[in-house]
Length: 341
Image 1: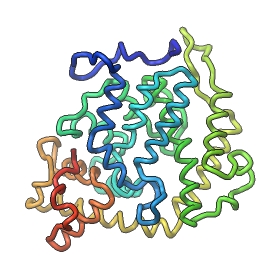
Image 2 (image 1 turned 180 degrees about the vertical axis):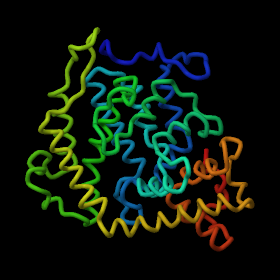
Image 3 (image 1 turned 90 degrees about the vertical axis):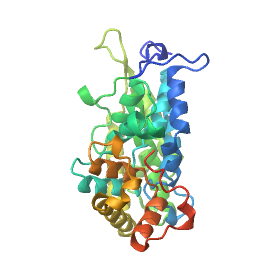
């Protein structure tokens, strides 16, 4: 590894534990994330398109795996710590709600304290997962908390910047992944025709997810290098100005033509209504307290957020059915209490 890569031997945790004889601290983080229940639930959470629109659209889990693959490739080429990179990548979206970013916005509008999926990812690994949290290393937890960029700068600075370069790498891999595959899924859903993409964008990225990934990764390698302003020198990740401008245009195109498409908005309205109903009923109906882990939250509203955010799309729809009818669909009678942990 490069001198500026994170070292597992220096890793710290909130609770000290004996070292594992055959795995590094970051490998243990990765394995704990991989085997926890919130990770498995990502298979049934929306990325952009609700699963009912098609079997081949990305889910939150497949997006996570694509981010992990891109991030590990970048880490290997930059000689960073691949195990830390993979751990952050696999855990970066654990805190996402059902119904994707639309569900996140709905929950944020309902909860007095707001809601951000990256902060909830941290809450999951620190307190909720497996009933007690996963006791991950400081650098992994920091990477989870700071991975999301929204529509802000690709490379974080100051207090918003991850402590390790591996965390910065996840921010980059995340945007590369979603800008590549969201357009791919939109074409498969017949929301847009990739062939009608503006020519200036098409010239930079090509017409497939693979060529978009290749273009961004190649540009990142070509424009990143050692920073002369630090002692010792460290890696400065960078895209060319041309690529950053092209990425901004592509992101704008996705927001205009895909994320705001009337058909997608109509699909997501159902998710919004479902979350609103569930949140209000859980908040107001004491008979539903059996579903909440009140001992792990400062107040009932936070316990409700924990439960709702942990739901998969299909569980949320079935829970709504239970609230409306008083009967459990048979498919979830045996698992109805386990969507916080």
